[in-house]
Image (cartoon, rainbow, N blue to C red; front, side, top):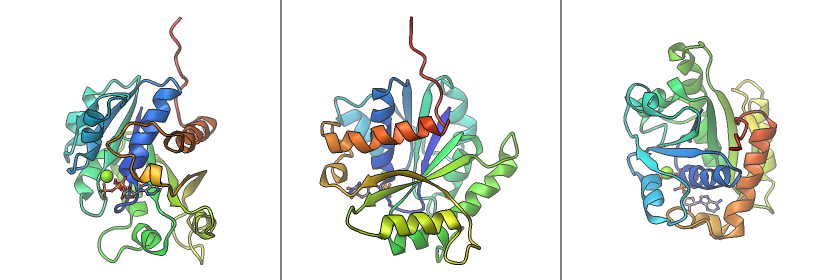
Length: 227
Ligand SMILES: Nc1ncnc2c1ncn2[C@@H]1O[C@H](COP(=O)(O)OP(=O)(O)OP(=O)(O)O)[C@@H](O)[C@H]1O
Ligand SMILES: [Mg+2]
């Protein structure tokens, strides 16, 4: 399968992609990573962290669906980290043609909510995902979930923005999102995770919970244990 990690702007997407990769590997899934962001930070993480669990392939091309996807081992969980949907709509469109599951990283703050739902320039991500249906074999958009990141424990914002996203905004007339109950906390150990080993509990526990929730929701394949 292919999981696409998307975000409209800088939201903690690469952090979530990398730490989810470690968590999937800990759970026993075979994982392979693809970096579709020109900054290639996931590639650098895979190169620099001794314990990074898999290879990270460069994949920052608007021909992702045609040139990268067919070469994947589809019996594994393949994860692609995409760049800003606002700045690289061509790459994101191509990833959306073939993704089985989309995880949208959002920070529960006013500017980040606005960039997701009503950007001043560009197409709202919900519309980009919806229109991808036209190019997909089944004619439906990919299953999409929102993962809230950088959540301050003492703040009411995570709950407030989870409700707004779930209910289609204040008036209920905007796109509705499936928001995961797992929330990634705002932590110094997570802030400094990109490029480094996954050697701290705070880099592991929230992402183990994420894998548990994705499994419970039926979004991940069964783990095949060798006899
Ligand atoms: N859970 C967290 N707690 C605190 N800081 C975080 C957390 N997750 C990410 N950050 C910080 O947020 C910033 C953006 O993270 P990251 O590079 O993962 O985002 P991105 O969406 O991939 O950005 P880019 O636009 O560069 O691709 C970084 O400074 C990172 O340290
Ligand atoms: Mg990034």
